[in-house]
Image (cartoon, rainbow over all chains, first blue to last red):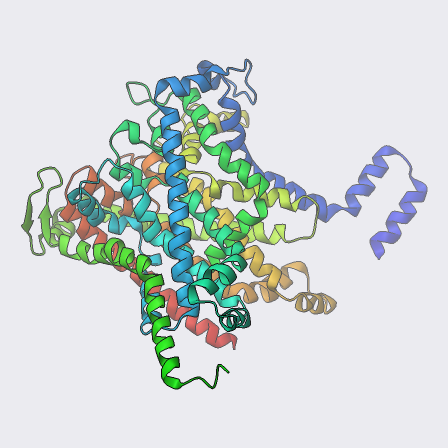
Length: 301
Length: 303
């Protein structure tokens, strides 16, 4: 109230630009402070991305320019070509892609089946089995990776992609999927399914034709979480893969170094951009779904 | 019609349905026993053995691995201290920043979506990419230190000095993951009824009082859950450390999870690594139980 009265007298008395600016500031002081705070907080989040994308176009010595340059002085597109010349990057890209797709499909199948059974089908021991599964969420993959390595070694599966496909589907990541699916199925009105049974549908028919189509949002969430998990996964490829041809992108990025183990920064950053870009593009388009998927997995897990 | 059907027919239908239930959960449960539960049990067995990854020699060792851990391995106490420091710094930093961001972003103002998108972006970015960039920016004469020089500060060689290396790993990890906690807090904040704030401000409470006396207590259950999840998450930070400092300099950033990997796949001592994994198992278990107990108590108080 008071501030309004002052500002309206000001308005009449002062028409100069400075007056108007200070008036604006006085009126929106809190908002401006908030924006300033947010902008300051954005710097450590925004700058790494900015630097990643711009430096991917810089010649090697430009990256070390003093003082630091925010934009390339000359845009060097050859960095991107050199990524592919330096190592079988297209191969690595394909590896990451097909593994992530298989892991996603596998997780969708396994999680929707067992999520549905835990939500809707009565069978002895279901609560106990579900509790057991939940306990898996708490155990770091790093604890189980040693026996799993021995196991895979015994099966002759080291230096194959099979562990990278099987372990995420059946390990903790898959359990998160099952948990999300179960929560969603629990929320579907049971009347819908009963109508299906009355129409003479089997359990499978009810699951496939009624429950699953309704659960689409949950399937989307599981798809997003699983694909990202596989695409970004580092420990499993590091442990199970030695052969460069079988590398996935995270391993590939890491190995872009000269013969002394020093990073070839501009090539490495170009490869990084190529790795991060599809994820960021999907994120830009489906921003709400991505954030919601993580919010679900975070609070429920 | 349905209700009038013979009970025996119904019972056989129920039994058939139960069979379908087992069939539906079978892939997941078989996988779980093979690749999660089995390995957890195996880690305990491995921890009582000498297992050389290179030669494949396996011998019973009794408690020798644990004796090594407690008596002869000079690195182990260091590793535990590092893990403790890492968690004790990372968790409060992460939670405070996440709360602050969530609190700012739940104002109904223009552009908040942009900021939310930005703060969350590192969560979906691969750790390798995030670390590659920060490793450059944290070099002695590059990146951040050029900015600092601009304002007259001589920055340290971040990743080459023990304490600064730890600080760098913690801060860049917080930046990488804070967005996740932020969105969880945001949805919790949005579920808090507005009436209390309004009533309080009518009664003359200022913004700080409203935050500390009304908003924060209502957020407490969420904060608790997020805190424990962040503690457990902090015990699993492996790739970030491997890529950024490789545990160095001089083991300054070698935390338990990193040390397990190092013993298993660099020293090739699978038995000792398993003994270390058993320790990690019990630490995580303790954290989980604490969370469970606190959660029960909080939910009880809520009602």
